[in-house]
Image 1 (tube, rainbow, N blue to C red):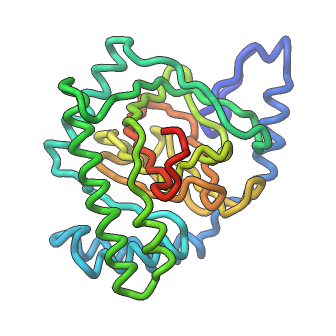
Image 2 (cartoon, helix red, strand yellow; image 1 turned 30 degrees about the vertical axis):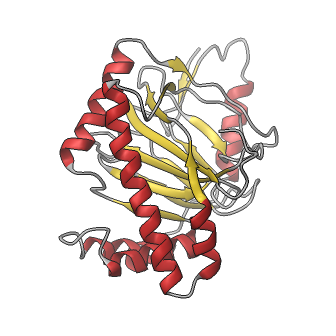
Image 3 (spheres, helix red, strand yellow; image 1 turned 120 degrees about the horizontal axis):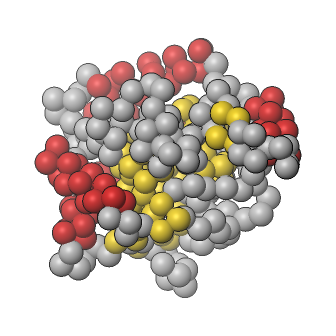
Length: 284
């Protein structure tokens, strides 16, 4: 017996074990969805001002001021149309080719054990070095350079606006991981349950994800659900649509618990993590 939940999640073999369905239903009853008022406040305070600057784009000092404030107050930043379109399409092509040629592996779960819900991920991943001669490496290398330019812009803006604590933290965000290209296959309704990216104390400070889903529409699934701060907080802050060439930056610790909702259409993304440059003992 199988069941498809309203979220798109696919549950199988329920005739032998109904536990997963019970846990899913219990989890859904505990969620506190974002209210219309909260969504409207995020839109008016952060996203609308940035859209009005699109012709000058994210390096514009006024845009940087909005993003620094959002990172300080909300712990995440969204930047649409982040890369030049040809660069974004190149990363997307590399990602899709790696998945179609079966060069990706099923993602492995690591980290803390005290997670809410079922600790589960269904993505396929490929780690790509940023300094090799491979086409994928060159594509994600350009992406990483742009992330670092954005981080440095945020640091300078924070420093100039007197947010010295944030400026110091961003100054230490230098060491980076390899790039992780991912696909969440629609066939399996792939998802990733609620977690944080630094639950195991792995040194990650900042997570950068570029979405690569050309033509994404509501109903395609794969949204990134952000929660309010706290290991066991089920209050939803926002559900981020994984639209093409959208970058999200967020703190990797318990300020931003998150989960990936079930994908109903193959969902592609590229993630790079930035580490604590003031503590070189952390493994990269």
